[in-house]
Amino acid sequence: MQSSAACAVAGSTSPNRWETLCALQSLLPLLKKAATDLRRADMVYWFEQADAEVANIIRGHPSDATAIPP
Picture: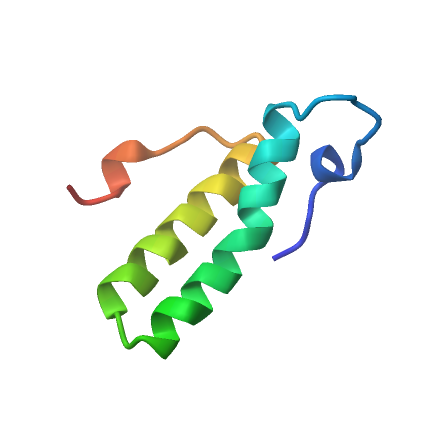
Protein backbone atom coordinates (compact mmCIF):
# COMPACT_ATOMS: atom_id res chain seq x y z
CA MET A 1 0.00 0.00 0.00
CA GLN A 2 1.28 3.44 -0.86
CA SER A 3 1.63 6.17 1.70
CA SER A 4 -0.18 9.39 1.00
CA ALA A 5 1.15 12.92 1.34
CA ALA A 6 -0.51 13.10 4.76
CA CYS A 7 1.86 10.40 5.99
CA ALA A 8 4.88 12.20 4.58
CA VAL A 9 4.23 15.37 6.59
CA ALA A 10 6.36 15.55 9.71
CA GLY A 11 7.73 18.08 12.12
CA SER A 12 5.29 17.91 15.00
CA THR A 13 6.70 17.48 18.49
CA SER A 14 3.86 15.18 19.55
CA PRO A 15 2.05 12.57 17.49
CA ASN A 16 -1.03 13.82 15.74
CA ARG A 17 -3.90 11.81 14.31
CA TRP A 18 -2.23 11.46 10.90
CA GLU A 19 0.99 10.13 12.41
CA THR A 20 -1.05 7.68 14.46
CA LEU A 21 -2.99 6.48 11.41
CA CYS A 22 0.20 6.19 9.38
CA ALA A 23 1.85 4.20 12.15
CA LEU A 24 -1.16 1.90 12.27
CA GLN A 25 -1.03 1.55 8.49
CA SER A 26 2.58 0.42 8.71
CA LEU A 27 1.82 -2.08 11.50
CA LEU A 28 -1.21 -3.76 9.93
CA PRO A 29 0.76 -5.76 7.32
CA LEU A 30 2.97 -7.10 10.11
CA LEU A 31 -0.06 -8.06 12.16
CA LYS A 32 -1.63 -9.71 9.11
CA LYS A 33 1.55 -11.74 8.51
CA ALA A 34 1.65 -12.83 12.15
CA ALA A 35 -2.00 -13.90 11.97
CA THR A 36 -1.24 -15.81 8.76
CA ASP A 37 1.68 -17.55 10.46
CA LEU A 38 -0.68 -18.53 13.28
CA ARG A 39 -3.23 -19.75 10.72
CA ARG A 40 -5.88 -17.41 12.05
CA ALA A 41 -7.95 -16.63 8.97
CA ASP A 42 -10.44 -14.64 11.04
CA MET A 43 -7.72 -12.30 12.27
CA VAL A 44 -6.22 -11.99 8.78
CA TYR A 45 -9.64 -10.91 7.50
CA TRP A 46 -10.05 -8.22 10.16
CA PHE A 47 -6.52 -6.89 9.66
CA GLU A 48 -7.23 -6.63 5.92
CA GLN A 49 -10.46 -4.77 6.65
CA ALA A 50 -8.70 -2.42 9.06
CA ASP A 51 -5.92 -1.81 6.53
CA ALA A 52 -8.44 -0.87 3.85
CA GLU A 53 -10.33 1.40 6.25
CA VAL A 54 -7.17 3.21 7.41
CA ALA A 55 -6.09 3.68 3.77
CA ASN A 56 -9.49 5.21 2.96
CA ILE A 57 -9.29 7.58 5.91
CA ILE A 58 -5.79 8.71 4.97
CA ARG A 59 -6.85 9.27 1.36
CA GLY A 60 -9.78 11.36 2.54
CA HIS A 61 -12.48 8.94 1.46
CA PRO A 62 -15.47 8.65 3.79
CA SER A 63 -15.67 5.65 6.04
CA ASP A 64 -18.12 2.96 5.05
CA ALA A 65 -18.77 1.31 8.38
CA THR A 66 -21.92 -0.33 7.00
CA ALA A 67 -19.76 -2.38 4.61
CA ILE A 68 -18.02 -4.10 7.52
CA PRO A 69 -20.03 -7.04 8.83
CA PRO A 70 -20.81 -7.09 12.55
